[in-house]
Amino acid sequence: MAERVVIMGAAGRDFHDFNTVFRGDESVEVVAFTRAPGQNLGETDAGHDRYPPELAGPRYPDGIPVRPEAELEDIVREEDADTVVFSYSDVSHERVMHAASRALGAGAGFRLVGPDEMQLAVDVPVVAVDAVRTGCGKSQLSRAFADELQERGFDVGVVREPMPYGDLAANRVQRFDTVGDLDSLTVEEREEYEQHVERDHTVYAGVDYEAILARASDESDVLVWDGGNNELPFVRPDAHVVLADPLRPGDTDTYHPGEANLRAADAVVVNKENAASEDDIAETVSRVRDANSDAPVYHADSVVTADDPDPIRGASVLVVEDGPTLTHGDAAYGAGTVAAEECGAAERLDPRGAAVGSIADVLDEYDHLDRVLPAMGYSDAQVADLEATIDAVSPDAVVAGTPIALERVVDVDAPIVDVSYRIEFRDATPAGVLDDVFDL
View 1 (cartoon, rainbow, N blue to C red):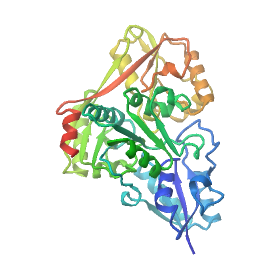
View 2: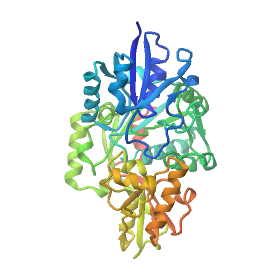
View 3: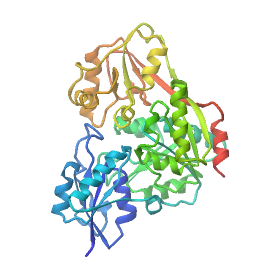
């Protein structure tokens, strides 16, 4: 009898674990995926109620059902499941063990898939950038590394952790070269891809990472893994650089798989020190050292710049921040808030009470937010709700701390001031860090 397995996930690592570990294993039958609650708010379920047979393979001619995580116990019992596999990221250790307790209570075993099982090998060098939590500044550092490698004459491919919204089979392998390639994507995808393609970095993503990495390594001299939701790298890295955030020192070693990333790191970067207290920096470094005493620790600032400060100065502004940093990452604010204060805004307007539709639902769900609006846009309907919310708040200006050019996706009455942010090392350079850990 084959071992009957349920994979808990969030439309990313769960599919990768299936593809690399379980799809070809005849001793295992995957009977269901579960869909994580509270991630990707506003995303429709269309295309996500079943992992399609085109991807599941010949052993699964009808595909594999994807059911809500709330039904885990029912699934275990109905499917007589032997094992529950936990396969998603940026969750507290406590939450992982609650999932384990639910599986055990229903009569199943519980396990995690390790990197030796699921990491794929390629024939080009790989530097991986990850973090202990969402919102530490991974994209800033991965862009800096890709820029440096490009300046050295390498053809650089940036491989992103999956964001497989829409038709999974159609998105098996995705490749983005220009801003125009992003037109059909969600706001959340654009936040991760846009600044790379503006710098002439080709971005690869999708669902089937064996095929993705085969194409990326065939077209590139070197790969940069830009680690999405802090997931363990899907590709075996030659160098693994992990960021920590002193604005959330207690999260340094208390989230999964952030702590695993930290323990596996070849180098650690403590970012955002310009916005943190000395005590919080010291606590972060202490926690880093307790988990990984061998990796060099670098110190860096996250430098925020408004494209045009004039519309902000003395104005009543609405700050729109990077969505995942506020929601998945639990941050109360982001770069837009920093820019609003540095540029002398008279006040930051609270969108609560004016929010429309699914945006109101997001603000209700995340009550820790401090007078900011997450840039949610998992569907056209949600983008319309975002536009309507901004207009209902009626600010003098919108301060956009999201990594995308917000005016490309919303049409609102107020002027939009884009905010950019970059990493600046206090004790090194991106080139120096690369040379310290990456043998090219």
